[in-house]
Image 1 (cartoon, rainbow, N blue to C red):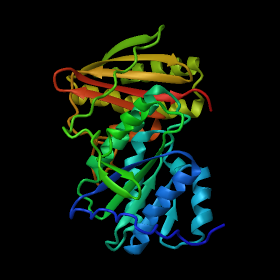
Image 2 (tube, rainbow, N blue to C red):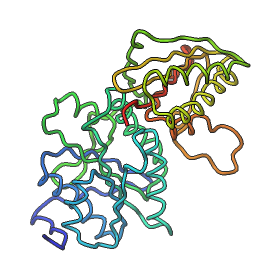
Image 3 (spheres, rainbow, N blue to C red):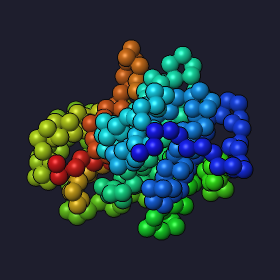
Amino acid sequence: MSTALPSKPSGAPEPAEQAPGEFRHELYPYRGEDQFLTGTLGFIHEALEADEAVVVAVPPDKTSLLQGELADEPAVTFVDSATAGPNPGRLIAAWTAWLAQQGDGGRPVRGIGESAWRPARSAGHLAELRYHEWLVNQAFAQSPAYSMLCPFDDADQDQSALQAVSRCHPLIRQDGQYMSNAEYLTDGVYPFEALQAPCDPYQEISYTDGDLAAIRSKVSQCAADAGVPEQQRAKLAVAVTEIATNSIRHGGGSGTMRTWAQEAEFICEFRDAGYIPDVMAGRIRPPVDQIGGRGLWLAHQLCDLVQIRSEPDRGTTVRLHMDTAR
């Protein structure tokens, strides 16, 4: 095994200069282990030459590849992205903590993050992974000391999959340097994929102030019937209470809940007339002294997937997913 970083090839183009005050978010399409190593080690090589720290969160097999090449390089920290759980809605908070820890004292930090695109739990999970990648640009827009590379293995993927994730990255890395990505969504409006229709049979109940106990009871029974483990049902009860309370307080005083089982998931859907303008709602850890405003954060921490669709003229839909297979 190699114990040193590879040298840059002779005559290779130098990476473009990073614009002052600009967070860099690069997509790196690759195929196979060799291309993975070429791109990621090149990114790390640039960081170490610039005296920057590096945080790596990739699947275990890719971690082993990189560790075999880097040996015990002290500036490179490997983290286990699985500790953030299956919900992509937890990843921005996790990356915020990882980058801040390594960048203590103002040191610039580069992140390498490869999402678990395969195997995905569901089409909804893939959609939320893509949305997370787009939100990364919003979350770190004012963090010029950070840069992030997102490897994406496009082997056996159709072009639509690569195009979909490409739209979430303003930069793309090719031949050892980054450049503007023509596929990136520059208008600042994310094109949400339509939520799948509820599976029949589903249960539906309207609620308002004073109905929280009935909501919890209904969800508990339906979740048990669907095979959700008892420990997960307890977590779901807390999340359901928070989301229904948000509807009552901020969504016009009432809402509608639906529950159903779908493949290996149990889903609770809440609809109300409110609007959530903050796309980061629930994804940033609330300050310890904050009073209120923790409902969506708790839902993300407790559920295996959370989907939010909110428009001023159409109201808000929140779906809470809990896996039935453990």
